[in-house]
Image 1: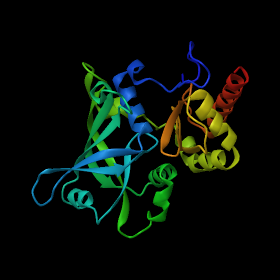
Image 2: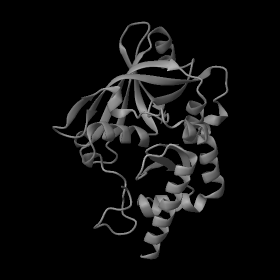
Image 3: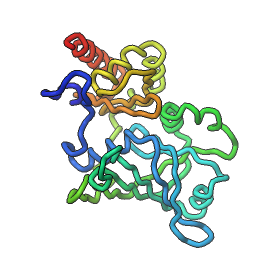
Length: 259
């Protein structure tokens, strides 16, 4: 897991490596880390593909989430034809972007009023709180039908939804407590979040915030940088989440003390 790899100096990145993961897990990791993606819709007037830049989040199971306005061309396109795709770019600052990971998720974009969609999107994009309730804005989810993952040259895999989404049927307790866990960590445990980032993810210091938690791990963000911290066990209840968060904080403190 992140934070337990050997042979690395304290503070070095311990984020999961896409190259070390199965294609479905690598695709999900790229999606979890993303703050933005390229949205492709079909232009209502001509049928031509239309690509636009959108901010993005993922629901607890990994379903992509959007907050878009009816004033935008891509929303008008979706209201005419819900078919769409999202390109998530995980190549970062690679010298040769084509050697890096990316995933295109294909499906249908539809409105959603799920509380978790709102919580997770606004948790990730704080500035969106200023316009999320405007009458022309609505939350959408891209209901995946398939995905196309490229993990660099020669690593190209078509994925079914079950390959890159996680089953949350056993996680009702965690999901119902999601908002409370996130707000508690941000309000009362800012120091622990900073330790997760600097000691376990190799990220710089700063005002890190938790944006979401799910059975596999949690996400934090600071000044346009995201980190994904995985759990060592599957977490389905608030108590299991607390135990894992406490364990990771202790691991981070121990690692810092050895520097």
